Amino acid sequence: MSTGVTGPGRAAISERTLREDRWWLSPLVTFVVFSAFVVYATWRAFSGEHYYASPYLSPFYSPCLADCVEGASDFGQPFAGWPLSAALIILIFPLGFRMTCYYYRKAYYRAFWLSPPACGVAEPHGGYSGETRLPLILNNLHRWFWYAAVLVALVLSYDTLLAFRNADHEWGHMGLGTVLMLVNVVYIWLYTLSCHSCRHIVGGRMRHFSKHPVRYRAWTLVSRLNTRHAQYAWVSLFSVALVDLYVYLLATGTITDVRFF
Ligand code: FES
Image: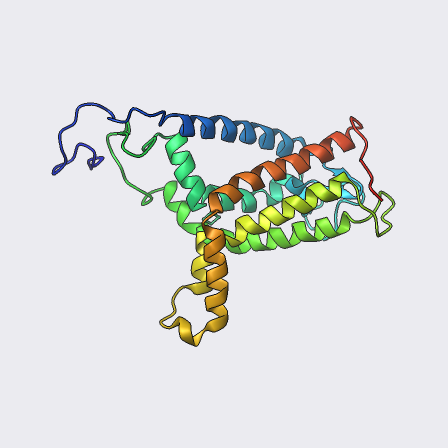
């Protein structure tokens, strides 16, 4: 199949692009930042240690369902005896959600596969099968990952609640870790609720909004959030990594927690 750029009915333009602006900057930044995150997240997810510094649990390891360090497991340990890092049990849900996200798809198709690298720039590939074959056909699972992502967001909200304790698990305390977890969970919810699939789940398949005023209001709210979905995607990616890094630095004794009260 033709790429369309040189297909029948198109002007025969030999240049790869006629754009003269720095169109390559956006995919390049995406490539560098996304690669850095993947390297960091892979290292942390496989390490299997330094993910809990009471009362803070790293979001990469939440919920901790295997042989977790004391205090890190709030939902039992049904995978006790699991030989690998506990993060690998639950990683598929946030990872699958982000990998199948409509915004991230655009970002990594452009930055990693150059397919195409930018608007008005021809891609180097000769064929195009869309998302009709493995592995890209799996991107159609996004809606189902959204349901899992809601559960993950609920668990992270619970973790944030637990962060209003001190290291001895007494309530009514707050540290810098609490603030970071709070900011993170707010952005996780904004990212999750601004999802295109969420917008369809809330307001799709209806003939008359007038007969469903509650769903219409919810759809209006989600639609507003949806305009900033890309921004929430990136900020929540950074905030997850930042909380994990903070927990890592605490757990390794590199820093001590800043306590406010
Ligand atoms: Fe991005 Fe659903 S479209 S999370």
